[in-house]
Length: 453
Image 1 (cartoon, rainbow, N blue to C red):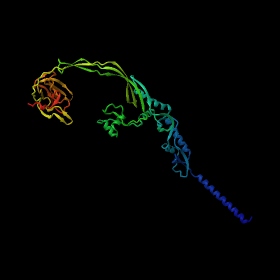
Image 2 (cartoon, rainbow, N blue to C red):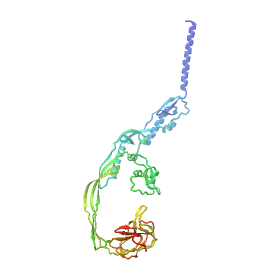
Image 3 (tube, rainbow, N blue to C red):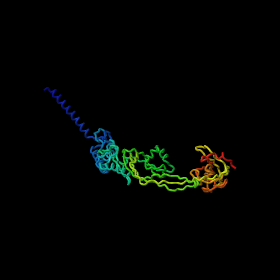
Image 4 (cartoon, helix red, strand yellow):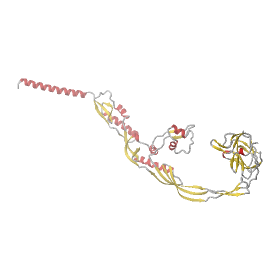
């Protein structure tokens, strides 16, 4: 072999060895430098660490803490991994720092038993026994509420398809028995309570919370009236139950049977005289009804049996029809001193059947004509009232809103006789005498029948 060729071969071999050595040195030097790892949670980078063991230690520590806190096996719901990174390691975390970082990012789950309604997962309980107790408890509470000594409870159905199935859920979805019951019956575990303040009403509270009065009543089915008490607690969340409970029950109770009244006329007694010859007595009957309810509200009631326990006794009344003597002169005196403030006929909102004569309380009231007192008592909106019959029941005068009555029923009075005093009793806006004249019990305008003296 020529000398020059040998020389070239040795040079090529030397260069190749040098290149290989340089590459090897570069690789070894690169491996000798600090190496970091990126921690990813569900594919998202969250931090850097220098040792993958830190990740195992942090996760193990978090799982152990959660298991001790909840008292049940716990697993991780996220995908967590450490991936080699070319970034610098100056911001990398140690095991404690990584554990603190992951505590707010990871979701922990456990095996639970889900109560589903019509295929929709609603609420999770820690074990199957507790889940079943929730359903059984709802049934038992409902039956207890509508049971009693006179009640034969029929059947109770839940219209929805309710199932209990094992399922892995996040820890924050677990509920207690009480919470689960409230959610199933109200549709939510949200409770907002309002305390009634002075001057508040159902309307003002509903308006202030963008509700209707009907919604407020639905949220508080225990309300029995619109009257509120200061300090009373009202729920502001309208229930939309997940469950629809339908029940039937038979209730038996005793009711009164009304008695009839028989009137016997007696012309030996005055019209204001009435005698009860026989008092009425209610009859009694036992009634059994079948009631259908939906979520506690009665939706139908049907009588299924009636049993007569006692028949009613008719009340017999004797009414006097004796003709009252003609005592009126047909000439009237003005019944009191004062000014007419409201005449006979229509006035805003009502028809006025007499005239109002304003006068101070205690002003004397006189009989407009001679006659017989047929009524002297408190009577509805008239307050203290006197009615005088001036003969045969055809003509009567009425005196209302009195402060005092100075005559008795059956008493014969003369025209101009003091019979009472002006007052402000009954439905009255101020002291005055309400005065009427009635022909055959029909009010007419008093000013058409006499002139005040």
